[in-house]
Length: 141
Image (cartoon, rainbow, N blue to C red; front, side):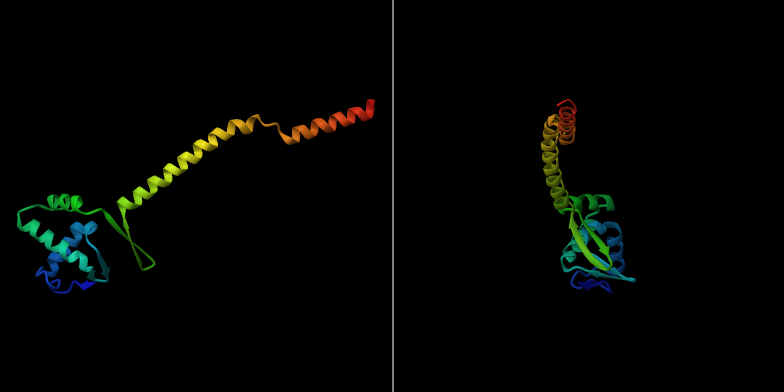
């Protein structure tokens, strides 16, 4: 990770501009904030250059955001106890969809078993009937 002090190495983009890009387009950039400084992932350097070129071509922030959203999957970075976890939303939602399909199949199978289970005799009821029969036999036997 590169440090956001002065120009980001090799991009020629001033620190204030980098901070503005991070504030406006954070979903598409891999960066980590440490106090008042940012650590920028090497892969994000190309993204900063692309953003700079878009603004140089006269695009506004919404147009740049739309362009970036079309080029890259949405990635969310979550900090949990200082650990960084990056999740690709397309992959995560696809996996969730597959799991939901599996659960739907299981629920359908269970729904088919329930009517069959209702028609089975209750073992406690059968036991009561046998005990009643034996008692009746013993009394009147």
